[in-house]
Length: 85
Image (cartoon, rainbow, N blue to C red; front, side, top):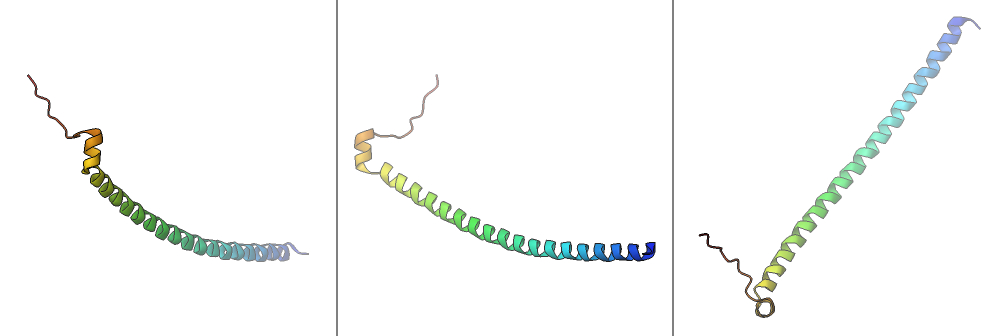
């Protein structure tokens, strides 16, 4: 075979390989973007759920602190100001 024919075969195989790698990379990127969007939606939902749970727990804690039984068992928990001399 002549050197020119060998170089043409090499460039043809190289071009096909580059095209295949590009297609595989694009498909991988497409699915990666879809997965990241799903993770983003899931994390948003979790954040909203945690915020709601936190607010609910704060309300429960306040209602427990304001109950008469809590005051009876633990006494008055109001902060006292210390006087400085």
